[in-house]
Image 1 (cartoon, rainbow, N blue to C red):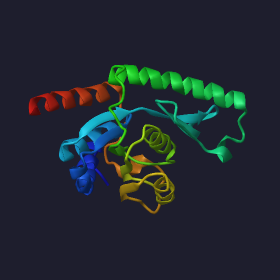
Image 2 (spheres, rainbow, N blue to C red):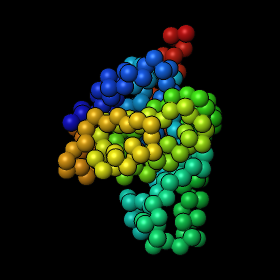
Image 3 (cartoon, rainbow, N blue to C red):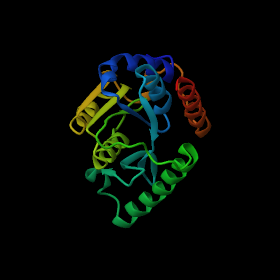
Image 4 (cartoon, rainbow, N blue to C red):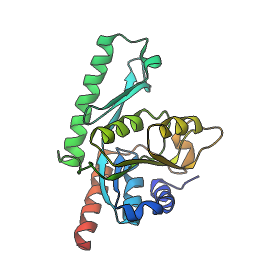
Length: 214
């Protein structure tokens, strides 16, 4: 069990040291992955930014989803899960989440585009991988932007989900795959929903530290 996301990030950073010489780009998935990604980027002296990806939730059960969409429109749809929804409903939910993606890009990244991904080794980081939908949409974004390699990294994941995600990434690094995995929160002593304010504070801290180092 990790104390919190910062603790998980420091442990994950050690496991990712093999990528340090590849000058990777760390992209943390908003919101839960941001503090984890920050710790990794700091340890590896890597470039760091955030990537916005959203679950496509069922209208009657928003905690569950049938896919995900990333900020550039890249998406993953679980066709078995979405079979109960009409095309019109899927489009409506997608439009709603696209609006939220745009809001988050504007609020959290100030509307600034993603760093250049083409030709780079990208490490996608989240605080855990439950269903894997947002991670798969994020991988697709990186592929569409011609990343040289896409590495997926998380402190915890379900074993079967990790195997599925591994088929889409070049490599995957997961510190723990509990046998009885039911939620990312179970791997953390201190678990809470991350706010927009916390994300912007972490990014501001990163900018200050980067400015001091140059």
